[in-house]
Length: 183
Ligand code: S3P
Image 1 (cartoon, helix red, strand yellow):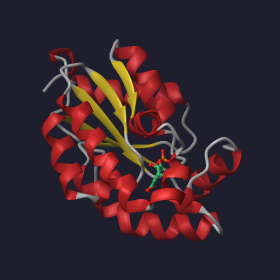
Image 2 (cartoon, helix red, strand yellow):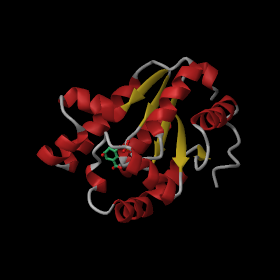
Image 3 (cartoon, helix red, strand yellow):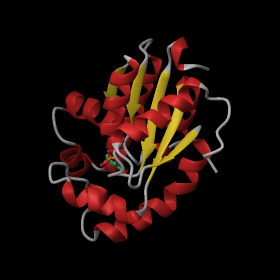
């Protein structure tokens, strides 16, 4: 697959790694649509992710998340799609995204994640309530092998600008056969 053939890029990784920002910039670079699955969920439910968790529970959120992933994956649009950090925990979601496009994993150290989350005062992340560091360690230990296994390409984002991250992804997606970085 080549980006020019018109397809999809799914951006995965831990909360705070910068998926939405990178997806938006990458989409501009490629002339693709930018789609954020959490935003779609919030629009369809007319409320925030935090409120959905609080009012209906995580399972309900995950059901809608899967539906939204299926909807964006089946669209004919070329798109860069950022997924919530936990979307990879359902096999169904993995199957959908692997079929529909390339999966890009943004990876960062806990220090980077924590400092970015500390600076993000606008988003409430229910799964990180309490001791953020402790929660990040728990979530990362459950997820890191899945991120590694399902991704076609990994970018270690620590210390890199958004432009650099985007350039690395564009370079890979234009020539996606080899993935030496994804070890
Ligand atoms: C979640 C991450 C959030 C959001 C929800 C659950 C998770 O998205 O989907 O709060 O399970 O890690 P971000 O990764 O964009 O913070």
